[in-house]
Length: 160
Image 1 (spheres, rainbow, N blue to C red):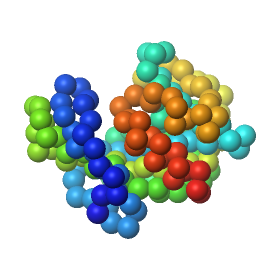
Image 2 (cartoon, one colour):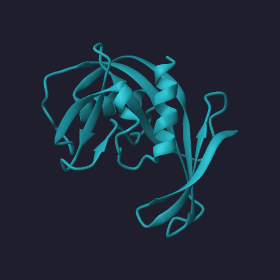
Image 3 (tube, helix red, strand yellow):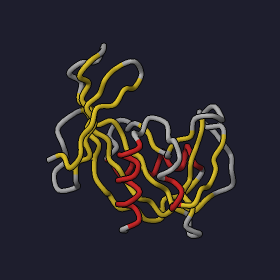
Image 4 (cartoon, rainbow, N blue to C red):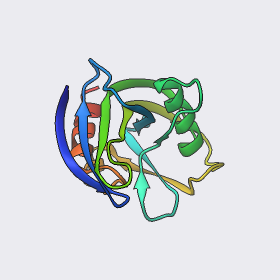
């Protein structure tokens, strides 16, 4: 099922992280939705909580939300943007192989979303947003995303 897989250290633990296609949702605990959000000018949206570590908009589901509803809500909350269209590109499957959460399997849906930016009015944990050319995104350190994984995600997003 997994197309690519590698070990990744995060939060003092070791995770086996896999990219899985859209054909079959991997087993595990749903852990949210995240997107490469692209404006109509072709820029990708990044957000930060602390002004140092930049990330893609996304987050965990609330009770009763499906993958897409989680995506729409999180992009609005974190990036102050409306999702106009979204394509599911795949899933990440992370299994903790060493650390306090050993055996835990987390699944996240991965998207390419066309967004319309709204006026910047941060309401939650996010302090800032910035735009970067989609072509440059794979060269940026995005918090919590292994470089090989981000490169794959950008390739998939460009193909949409």
